[in-house]
Image 1 (cartoon, rainbow, N blue to C red):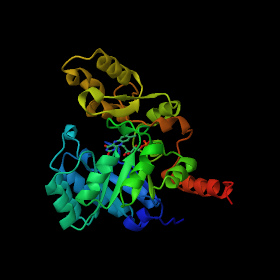
Image 2: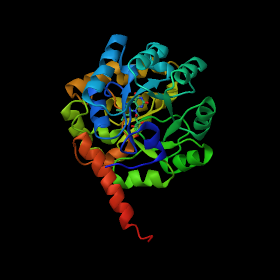
Image 3: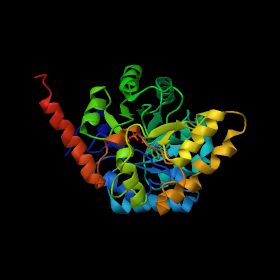
Image 4: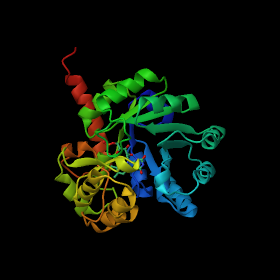
Length: 324
Ligand SMILES: Cc1cc2nc3c(=O)[nH]c(=O)nc-3n(C[C@H](O)[C@H](O)[C@H](O)COP(=O)(O)O)c2cc1C
């Protein structure tokens, strides 16, 4: 199956879909499965505190698939990561030429590195003004995710339905739209809004290959569209997450207000507690990013099946639309 859009032509994928990078999840096997199925898998560099392991996982993706994949460079200062320049240098040495940068505007040094290496730069953000800025800095494409998305929401709170067309009108580069894209109907919707690709996170979180504990996935299957909340806004790190016990605790602490909120919420949102939840399946150990789209997901399936069904269903709905 091959669908041609401005986005697929830019990155040479068969499907107009990006598999959203997920912290502690988007490692080699999962990323390779997404790329091999025809979408753009994205390795999350922030997972790797050791450059050697980062390089090994890039090599592991290349061993598993010869299809294109990208690396996400996280620009959020709170991620406590290593030097982003070094990740870019390793990507260059290993021949990875698609970089997704997410968060704030990248520093000049990173932009000039990306440009001098001849990489394709996709910038991921949550607002039209950031998309415009990225285009002015030389981005080749922009991903915008609406307020319903799993993960960082920013503070503008604009939903996918409005954010995607607003961005399409504001920039001339290809736009990838996301936030709540979980099936063929939502894929078709985002393409109808003018995007030339869709980013899909939460739907792929609920895939066979996603390396989180099976019992966590099964518990998430029970969640509805109202079982998420935006937390960590008080510390400048607003994220939409699953409303489990730890997330409720954070909502409570933030509602109380006051100073020094970060140390109070940290035990509930730390990377370590999330990792414990992912590895052991203890669904109350920490918090996990999650889209409102979770309410539309009914089955855990292999990545290839999820992606191909999405595209087939989009084509089918398109054919059946009563517009001649
Ligand atoms: C569990 C999880 C972890 C995520 N971690 C990251 C991350 O580390 N960096 C990032 O840029 N986006 C991250 N995201 C956001 C996704 O890459 C993607 O933009 C988002 O999931 C799309 O919205 P959707 O969940 O409605 O499909 C994460 C999302 C989820 C569900």
